[in-house]
Amino acid sequence: MTGPGALLVIGDVVTDVVAIHPEPLAPATDTAARIRTLPGGAGANAACWAARTGTAEVRLLARVGAESARWHERALVDAGVRPRLVVDAQEPTGTVVALVGKDAERTFLTDSGASLRLCPADWAPSLLDGAAHLHLSGYLFFADSSRELAVIALRAARARGVQVSVDPASAGFLAALGPQRFLDAVAGVDVLLPNEDEARLLAGLPEPAGAARAAAELSRRVPLVVVTRGAAGALIAERGRITAEVEAEPVEAVDSTGAGDAFTGGFLAARLEGADPAEAARAGCRAAALAVTRPGGRP
Image (cartoon, one colour):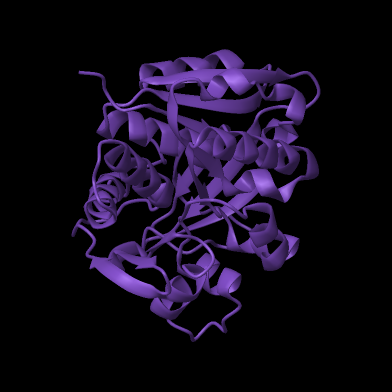
């Protein structure tokens, strides 16, 4: 019996500097914190969680700087991912500083570095050989060259009948790019995985609007929409209506960095093994619950 086809993730590999500070930041002086330097990146995190929770082969295409390429490659291989890391000659690996408060919520300072310099020359059609699913990190769509690559990969996957998912990644970057421009770029995807803020933004709804309304609206454009809601779990929408609501796993959160990536990885791994959307969302919630109990975004 053959196993499920491979999962190909195209996205970002970054170095995370996670600072957990129990007390509020004190301007102009010191604030005590627990600080760790860890491998991260939305695409890489999702790939690692998919490899941990599923049986399918997981591949990752990303760009990194020469100064940390070997460290990142080893971390990915150790996590069960088959990386294809393009070493950028000009820019260092992207860096994200995550400031995590007492409530485990995080604020990001992001220097995308080499990650957004992925370009069409980095693409090879053979990456899709044996693949059953392509996942695109939303960060790809926020720079011209990486967006061009993402669109090429999306079209290649569609031509082969390979399912495609996208995680919009960042409400702030999404607003700067423009929601309609993003939606135009991802036209033809099968699965959209936004959080509540991203869903409202993409649906063109005001902030007080509920996630359910946003999910339903977006599912008129994308066949399957899964909106993550943190401690409130996830909503699934298809054909303009909510078809399932999944509760989050109750845990004591330490750091919410990468929780959405963990959900994505768990969800996609379950889908590749034949789970229906609700079952896959429960698998995603289990991965996310585990992710928030430790610093950083990886298993």
